[in-house]
Image (spheres, helix red, strand yellow):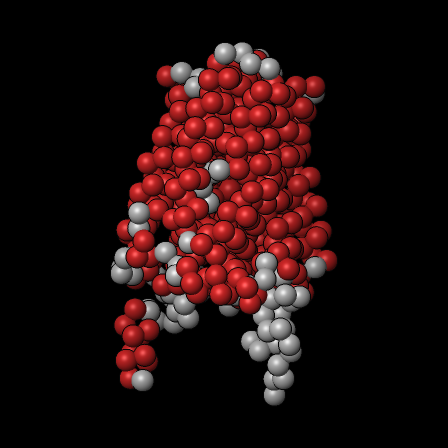
Length: 429
């Protein structure tokens, strides 16, 4: 008994303010963090690389947005199944065939685009490309959950993962834009495929840190799908709105910078947006919050919707950079709080699936936003695509306010949701 009491005290910092330094000293963390970072780049590079490649070969932002949207929808649809399989059979069993399929599909999509293939052929290649994107972020979060279960460092880990995600959104768009504009229109997608292959296989090789397959499989049978948790469904709507910001800005910034004759500024402006997101995430992880997570999410999302309303009015590079920075600073708190809420809403054995529902929602929102923003830019121009982040976040905010009570974790021992938690209610004194 003594050892079980002292072990958490050794690994956990002071309860009031756990820090990043102590988190990163967790034994075995770097073995999955480093390859995981490389394998995460596809999520940040894929959509923009497709937009830039297809726009170059077809001359249409609408066609480029549609091809990218098919990839995003496919990713959103198949990501939860990937997470469910990882919970049941292990991450390695899902990752290895997934990264091989993704690499082959991305290469096929590149070849078709360069050969001037019809749009339907690009769609046919985009489906497996999106479906096979490795869900590294959710898998890393699941590994943290196993290592830090019951530790006050869990909140710090959620913030760290969001910061890491946003760092990829700083590096990814800059890299994709630089490769597509300075090297070759296909270079972004080819690099994305290479990073997926190398990073994904290296991450899959780290067997010692992945959640135990037997325990995960047993928990899946007992708890059912994470989608049955009402709070997860509310979070999905919120993350759809966040995806509308990513997708709307990707297309609209590309259209704006091309209209002023400076396409290379696209990656810089998107990088400023992502940098604001990353910096806000660092601050969020260092603060010992007193307000309940569901209240923080509603307030933070309100700030995001308000900030997004200023994007369409910005008509210069400096104004867009400032507006993008502000929007980015508002996204990080919403993402971090949403992922933190999963820890209290979803049983351990279904969390990888829950995380993939959220990342899939971001991809789906991004796909819809890329499509709508592309059509608006083609038909109306003048920054009309920036109306998409405003509309997406406003609709999600209304849903959050109306259903905020579903984000409150139930007391342990009660029936949490249909098919989740105990099969029968347990009395609590």
